Image (cartoon, rainbow, N blue to C red; front, side, top):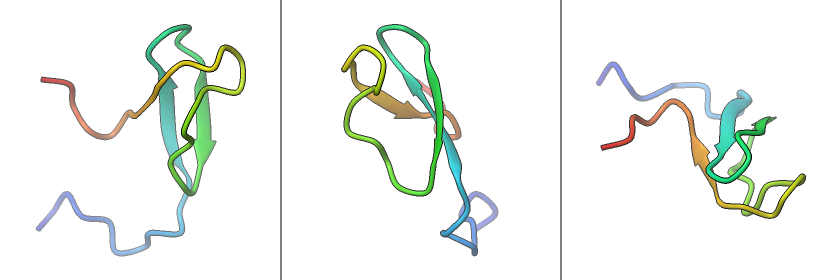
Length: 47
């Protein structure tokens, strides 16, 4: 599978649905550090 990264320790970009803040993190942040909004992984397309 081409979309699976073999190195899971790498930082990934997460974007806040509310304010658009982008955070680089190894693990998924629960909430945006700026506004507390929900975060999404930018490598996974929205449907």
